Length: 596
Image (cartoon, rainbow, N blue to C red; front, side, top):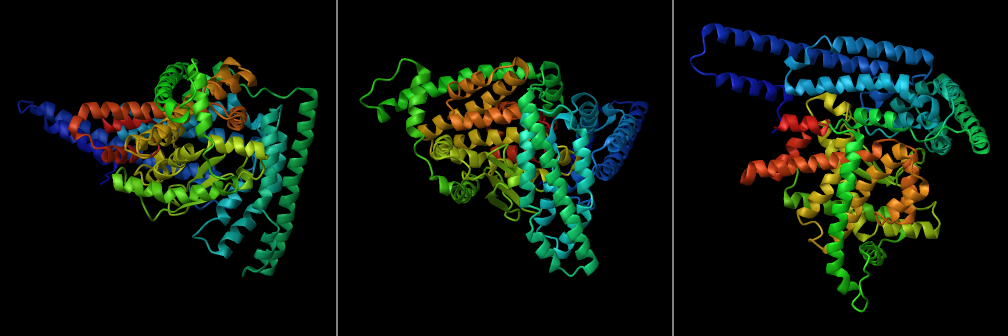
């Protein structure tokens, strides 16, 4: 059963008041009551502020409201020009002033967390605009396809409603891309190339078939004519942006004057603090990852010693532990699905994960919230091979999409390398991570949080950390029948999570070369070359995000173990999971505060 966070916090306060000694004087009692009234009044005022803040936020950032499923501003595209940035800054300054009128120390724990999440978001907005300035050097952040796809994929809008929204939205596209071109200043070559491919993918959403479909709606002839005009203008604007970027790419490659994708230690630490909110610095997390890399490798050595005679009865084990592990993994990894069955195999595995979770009573699943496995849309490709697109808190009955990129664009050699990486065992771990009980399950719970703030300002480290945590938890509970091969592959996968942090920090702060990065992944984490190459590319297209997996996982797992030790026989795994997830996607350090 779920209660509101405010009710839980107030219940705690009232409980403490009831335990005061009977000898307390009347004046002290009266003073205590006044303090409680003031505190309750502050919380009521803060709750009202939070609700109004969200409404104002959606007006200021309509694209974000569309992502959350709010619905009122789906047909608006904000033009990313100087006037908008000035307006955004005025909004942020106003909201910060309102926020800081509250004394955070007088709020309940739940509202304290909401306060910190709002504050972090506003301060990060200032930092992004004034210091990080990615709007100048990351052309890939300009892409209209997501908003149009969100409208057209809706299960609950009629065709006429969808096309009316698309018609309205199309009017902004030319000005949007004109502003995008004006913003670009010394971009990175990597982001320029990504922007080209993803904007080319926009035509998988804005297809010529839309013209035919629109002509069959019940909208007026005048609207149909306007649709054709706006649609053609939008296509011209997108193609113009692609041509602009293509010329820019050639210039950057020829002159070698592209901005480096490495952001350096100072910016990295600042971005880590905003994005992760873990209580650790980036450097401290990097050092923890180094320690865990050694520990996990040691576990892999033990399993390799156990399995060696089974798979190589006539061959002496190499003296070098890394060589022995690598040889065993390479031998096992040939067991994988065929390349043309990759997406279908993922679809087949989802029901078995659901069955295991239900039979083991690990967490409640909601059968009314569909999970749809699909091929990754073209406008999303080029960053990750698998991902989840989840509905926001306002449209939580919409589908959650498990995006899987097919292997069509790979050569036979590349596909074989990729499939060895996602072999028989690791493909199952991937599905635990992305689907059940990983991302899909957590994001369904997040949408049910009584605090919209905690759902809207989702913490990436908590979200990714939960998915990584479930991988180990499922194996601990018997998924895979404690097969040593499954545990070996799990540790290989977990080593990848750890090395994500080492790679990201190594690239952005320590300036390691591509050769050094690939060596870390292939020889230090036993990854296939195709996977390592893909991860290197991804690390050049993001900063800090790759650390979120390990940092979130480490904090969640350590917290669970502390709870088990504290509660002993009273510890209930399912109860822990459901309570942990009931607080939305708040940073782990704040969830721990609420649960303790």
